[in-house]
Length: 333
Image 1 (cartoon, rainbow, N blue to C red):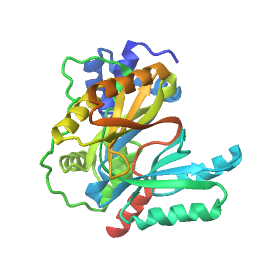
Image 2: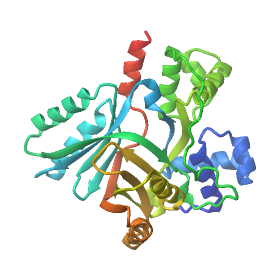
Image 3: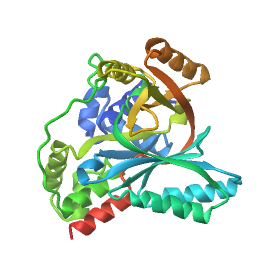
Image 4: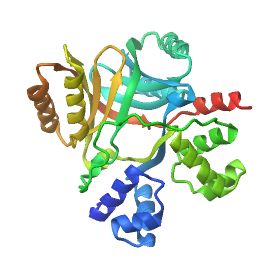
């Protein structure tokens, strides 16, 4: 499917808020509601848009995010697929990528009990004792995504290209209806309040108010789309950075730089191992090399590139997995 500028503007607006109604999209893109609706449905059908997701802050639900890195040994294509399918199917596994480089697979494990990660890795090692090699787990302290950067749409006000400031969120006591609502929105963020209300047994207006309250509490952070990056000609990489004797101000300058960089669509701060991970998307290896050289030229006195990891494919997108909601619903019976 060949995308024109209007398609890219629609994708851009949906990447900032995919629950935005058609009438507001119409004003932003300067197309009729009917045309925008048709274009969105066509982009879904053609798999330009792979999903509509809700960014939920799992820490406010009592869970932590941990990144698991595993090396495969002596795997056939069939055996590799079998292991990947087992990992993706785990109820507490979120985003997953098959990578080229040292690590064969990287995935997010979201849990309120870190022992679950150890149990799962030990299960993998037992079942695939000749195929699972080195592994590592890094707990995630902080992350920030910039899902709108893929489309190269320029705005006069770059409201999103800043370090997230600490907000004062309202206190909010979750109930079972909230958990049901979050479960639906997690991987179906564009579902209407009317349709959600029929599924959870409440009024559309109540759904709308609950969504607003969950956003005010910081539990819901954003609504975004997952694009098919390959259709845009992009390859996705992780850059793992190490800081050396940096001050807080120097680290802040690095963060400000990567946030504003047009090819950085996320950055993560893990606990230990290395100081920062950048998710970067590029058209070719020359673009990647330039990004790395620029980082070295600007911050080489306090930072070095630890590794660059190519994402080969992403079998599972970045949304809160079913195990989290199953656990929460059990608590709110």
